[in-house]
Figure 1 (cartoon, rainbow, N blue to C red):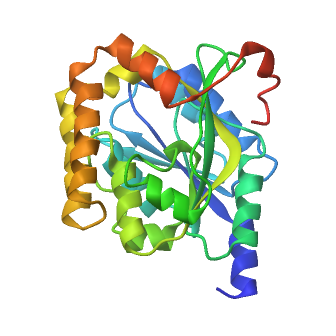
Figure 2: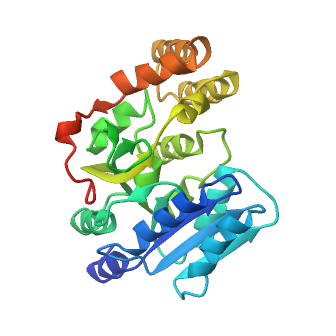
Length: 293
C-alpha cells in the first residue's frame, strides 16, 4: 500500500453495528452516542436492523436516520448475528471498518488510537484492544479482559481462546473478505473468522488500552454455558485440529476444559471462575475515571 492510499484510508472509515428486538433502547442510544462523539469521527455508520424491532428502538434510530453518515439496512426477519454482521460489512463503503455492539460504550478516543495504529503499522490486518467490564453503571468496573498485543502472541493465544474482543476491533475489509467474511457459527462467528484470517496469513495486533466498556451480568455466563455452546466451541477446536493449527493433545485439553466449564459447571460457579481467572480484577479504589478507557 502506497503513502497516498494509506493517507486516504487513515481518514475514512466505517462503523458497522447490528441491533435486534431484544436490545435495550437506552443502552443502544448510549452505544450510538459513544461512536458519534469520538475525537476522530467515522464518516459512515452502517446499522443492520436484524428483523422487526419495537417502537422504542425505532425511535432511537429515527434520531439519527436523516444524518448523511448514517446508513440503515433493514432485514425483514432475524437472520442471526453472524449473518447480520456479514450484511453490515457488505454495505460499508470504506476499507477500514470498526465493529461496535448495540449495548456497549466506546471510549472517546478509541478510533483515534486505532487509526494511528494503522498509520504506524500499515501491514496489520486487524487491531483490537482490551475491554473494561461493568455492572449497571460504567463507573462500576468489575474486571478487565486483557488480550495479547503482538502478532506472535495473539496467534499462540488463538490456539486456546478467542484472541480478540470483537466489539473493539477495526480491520481491513479486503482481508476479512479474503478469509471468507463472517459466517454463521453459534456464538463464535468472530472466533471462526479470526481463525480463517490466521490461515490466510493476516497480521494481528491488539492495543494495550481498554477501548470499550462492556455490560456484563449473569446472563453473559448463561450464554457461555450449555450443550449448544459447548458443541459450537468443540466444533471450532475440531476445525483447528483438522487444519493442523493445533495438535491432538491441545485439542483434547481444550475440549475437556470447555466441557467442564460449559456443561458440568453451574452458572454461578462459571461466573466466579471467569471473573477470578479469565479477567484482571479491579479494586474500587483503583478504578478512577473510565471516560477515556
